[in-house]
Every structure is written in structure tokens, then in C-alpha cells.
Length: 99
Image (cartoon, rainbow, N blue to C red; front, side, top):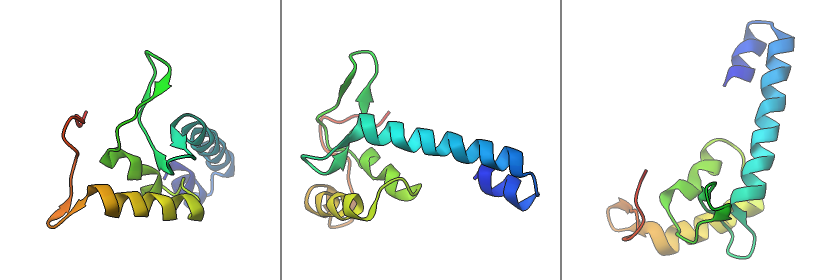
């Protein structure tokens, strides 16, 4: 958002800085949180330096901010529909706390 705002304001230097930061953040999220085997983004426990095993609603965040690639999005949607989508909407599974 900051990248786009500064681009609209004509501040290319700040826009470029925010773009670089967003690209770095996206790469880090994909490295730490994406599990290619299961096809979903999982929370990362920094204290224990490991990825969570819980499939939570937080895993769809990369879809909302444009981080997920098309193939990742397809896998996320499959899991979302199969595991988290219920009759009245998306639910947080039992045992997974929403922090």
C-alpha cells in the first residue's frame, strides 16, 4: 500500500524502497510459512524456529495481499474448501487459537 501511495504522490524513491521491502517480506513468508508438500501456508513459531502443523484461517492471508502464486492459490483454495469451509462460512478448527 505504501509503495502504491508514494507512486501516486510521485515519490519514486520511497515507492521503490517499499517495493523492495514488500518483495523481501514475500520471499520470507514463502520460505518460512509455505509448505509445498501440503500446499498451504502455516504459522511460523519463531521461538522454536519451526512451522506449525495446524491448518488455520491465517493461511489464506497470502491470497489477500498478493503473495501467493496461481499454483499456490489453487492448492490453498482446495484445502480451504475441504477443511475450513462450512455451511455458514470459514471456521477456525478446534485446537487452533486465533491470536
